Image (cartoon, rainbow, N blue to C red; front, top):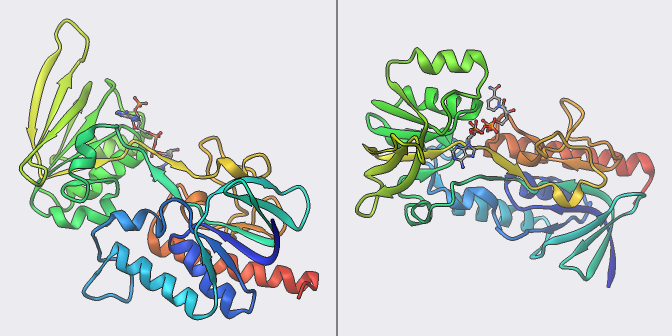
Length: 314
Ligand code: NDP
């Protein structure tokens, strides 16, 4: 089965839905495929307090439902399906969904997001939304004057630990090696902050608590002769061990950095292929916020509209 569309949007986070709102209002009749997690990462966040326009805050799922309805109101065709293959060698670009439906798209907006990495402990699932988070900017506010832990030794972990230290009373930074991988300036910020205690050579083996996180069980120098069990009391447990951008299926054609983030021309959502744009976290290792994703989704739709009118595709 094959179908021709002027604008195909892959991914249903703030970037994808915003692109769909703009593209449908520009009469591009966009088709959007939602993917495995309709609504994206925000659907795993309880309370969103930093998306402009909601003075009382809004839950992540509600915000995404509103964005979806807004896109549908203008005629966006929103479908469920996973992209399984792509051929972006020549326009119209061919995108295979669920191994059977081939969409031929004049323009393509990739907004497939990124997935935060977790340690893989069953307790991370158990306390999801009840003390476990992978986004300090999103959830840090709930831990004012509390104790939290951040896992990781890179720039994100140091940045999140420093951010949380501005809110919480105490921050443990749990680092599996004997050194931080982060840039020197970030390390200095962490090491000079009296609220942050760095636990080098510690690994988390479990979380404790009745309904919500109340503590973490760690092992110091695991596997060594002087291995030691350590328990810390915390109210929040933040993962900052990296993200994986969901770009694999486009990689044969689209340029990415070494981690997999899609490369765009700075200040634009343009990729190395004309008519193919990237928006949101799949192309953003730095900000990763719902509002920045929405902004880039808007840019991508405007670019798609201009590209089509320059090509004379009606
Ligand atoms: P990184 O890959 O740089 O760091 C991940 C960290 O998590 C490492 O310390 C790693 O440990 C640790 N880690 C990974 N897996 C586990 C695990 N299973 N258990 C315990 N620890 C684990 O990711 P970041 O998200 O920090 O950064 C990604 C990119 O974005 C980098 O290039 C970074 O420089 C950049 N960035 C820049 C910022 C800025 O300039 N302001 C801010 C944030 C990010 P180990 O060291 O042992 O491998």
